[in-house]
Length: 273
Image (cartoon, rainbow, N blue to C red; front, side, top):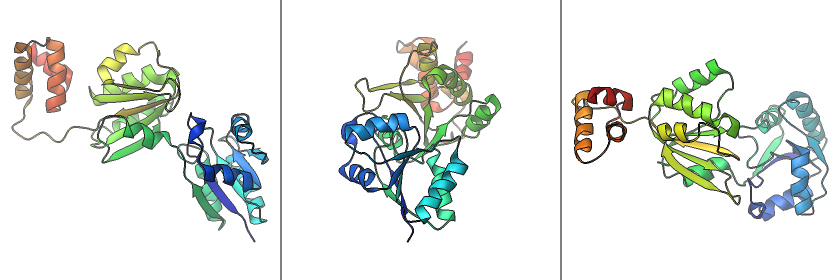
């Protein structure tokens, strides 16, 4: 009788988030497929788990996936884990699940922490509808194509990003989307957890030197609703003028008017000049 594949969520930072069911599952399966065995062994040692591991990562998905499926078909149970969070989400485990289904192998999930749901919950941006966009490509044409496809996306957008690429990504997003609200969530559930609520323009200036460290998730507000026919650029400029009269600088007024009207800050600022 064939075994099963268990997709097991692991902590994204704080080990206290590891569930009793997840611990029990990792103890009872015959082997664990780990993204990086050097990372997972620390977790196993913490909870006294001695189950053997095999490495399963983006460079060996096909060959190792077949080996894992062969063992499951012979009756062994396997748990797949990532370095942190829910495996199979922006993670090579996605391929293993697909291989199992293609071969008629049962797949079960043991829910656990995920940066996606956790970060959007504390972002301060609309959560009713959102789209997960994962990691942007390191290839510049691919990045531009990805971002351009989201230009009119109305839902809140969630991206994963590495700290050393943050400044370039923020610049690309500002160039594509204009000035929008953004929440930068770093080191989730860890000692230095931080939610930075700002705008794309301000984030570009403040983090031009890649000063933000740790695991990063970017949550960006979606495109503004379609402007009504009578909501013209001239009216957006007039709104900015009213804000200036109330004491704002031209730059601040243009930014606020852009947020209120959906027009680009640069276009409004040019209108003021």
